[in-house]
Image 1 (spheres, rainbow, N blue to C red):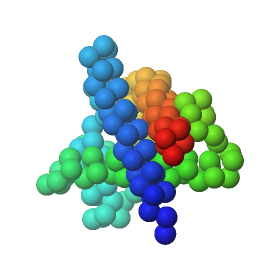
Image 2: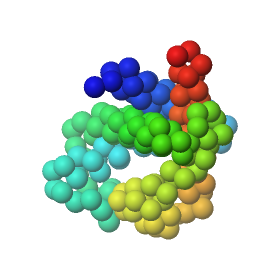
Image 3: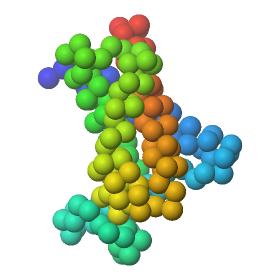
Image 4: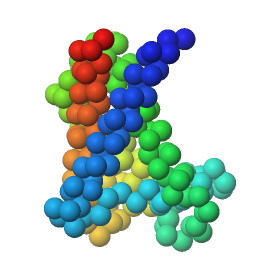
Length: 163
């Protein structure tokens, strides 16, 4: 097992997730749009583990779990490492290079996951159609995944430069 490769994947995933989270706070200060609610993500995840329900119709009606905030943040960072792994695999097959441009492409493509899986799983419908502002929800997801992807690409570029 190549521990340096695992280390690189984890570091890049965590780095990109930190950039994601910092940008959401900066963006909130500029626009008053709140960052992602990781407690609700944790509630969805813990409900999935306990009730085996993948798609909820109204997450607000799901009873709160004791550690849902911790679960949400943990899932958020775990998924970031997962995306970092996918990027690494695509890079190994020469489908993506390292750097912000390839990262941007990856981020833009990866937004299909929240649009077509995660928003519906949380009860918000495909492309957030059940939210009060679906276009805003989709635009924010696109912005965040683009920044996240660029951060992953940049993270791997840094490892290439110092490696």
